[in-house]
Length: 115
Length: 114
Image (cartoon, rainbow over all chains, first blue to last red):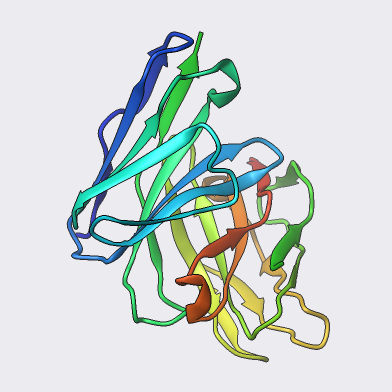
C-alpha cells in the first residue's frame, strides 16, 4: 500500500520558534509538494520539489522554506512561526513524467497551532 | 493563471438524496480534471478523474463529466449515504511546464443525515 507519512498529526508551537514539518513517501516519486489548507481557501501551494535538492516556490512561499536532501523526504520549515501560520499542512507526492493526469498521494496532514 | 471555482458549502442532504457539487475551471492549456475527497481526520484521496473532453470519471457511485464547452466538471451521485459525509475538492492539472502542479478549488463540505 502506497504511503505518504507526515511526522506529526498535531503540533503546538510558540511565536518565533523555528518549526520543522517532515514528510516521507515510499513510492520513489520525484515530485513532492507542501500545501496549506484553510477553510474557504482550499489548498494553497507553498513549495514543491521535482528532484533532490531542487525546489520551486508555490503561490504562498513567504515565511516558509523547504529542504529535500533525499528523494523520499521533503521538509517544510517555518523560520520564525507566527500566529497567521496556524493551519493544516498537507504533504503530497506525485510521479514525474506521468503527465497531468497522474494521481497525487497525500499524507494525513499536520494541524499546526502557533500560540 | 489557472484556477478552479466550486460551489460553497456546506451542503446538507438526507440519505438517498441526489447530490450535485458544481465545479468550473479556467485554464490556458488542456488540463486534466480531478475530484479529491477528504474524510474527517484524513488527508485527501483521489475520487475520480477525467483527462479529455466528454470523458466521464466514475467511482463509488460518483460521476463527473469533462465539459470543455462550459469549462465544467460537476460532481454527481444519485443516492448519497451518511458515509459520504466529507469535504470534496475539485482540482486541475496542466501540462509539463507547471511540473504537474495540482490547483484546487476551495472545497465543499457535504453532510448527509440519516
